[in-house]
Image (cartoon, rainbow, N blue to C red; front, side, top):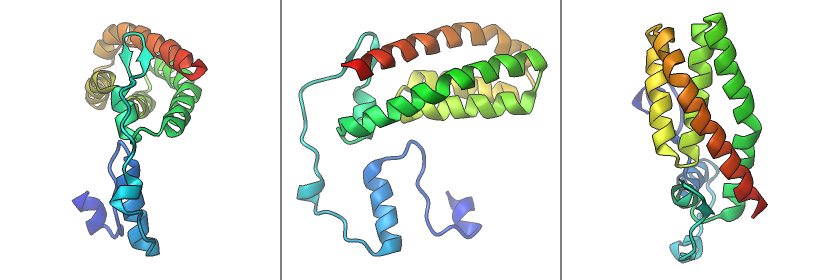
Length: 162
């Protein structure tokens, strides 16, 4: 954050993006009036999202209980993930360290945006390994991580159909 601001950026919002924080930063640039706290508070629901072993409560929290926004984030994840999984496979096969690191980083961010922190942490480990050129170790861990990613993709597809 400090490096970005020192480099001349006017503001900064870290990932995962939280709607309220983004609105506040944008409002400061456009001199928009933010909604009052009473208006912006999201009605709490006791309902949790049932997605099998995948718990989307964190994702719902990150979207401030905005189910439409959550569904949009899930759709984006589902659209991008198969390509990322294939890119990781291809990068491992072709020993393309830079492309591998980029794809893993993006996958990590996508998991974190959905509050799937465990997968984000696994991806962070692989990203660190990629930056060190430890491709053989990544390949050993990748198959089980890819299997879990595919399970999550299936559960997210089911969530969208609810």
